[in-house]
Amino acid sequence: MDIAGLKDRVKSVVNDDPRLFATDANISLSALYSYMSGRRMPSTVILYQISKASGRPMEWFLIGGKLESRRARESSF
Image 1 (cartoon, rainbow, N blue to C red):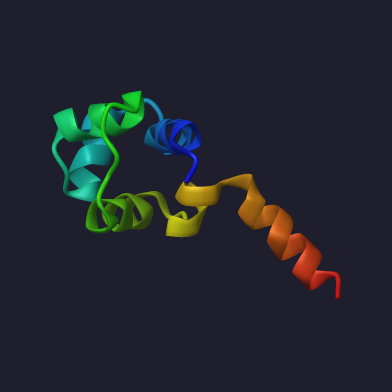
Image 2: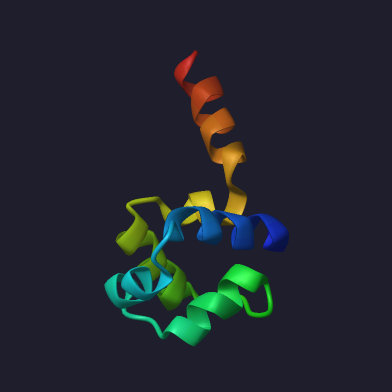
């Protein structure tokens, strides 16, 4: 798992309002900041909540652009 990438992807979906995103994801603001800084890894349940709040699939947070690349290769067959 790409921990550095995960924290960057979490940051990218939070946008300018971490408090609102934390509320939408039903997680504490301090936990969200911990995930954004890379100090903590979200559990599967928390990652699911972040995924739902952001509209992004869980896989995207775990493997990022590799997901899009794989889908593009698979759709070309």
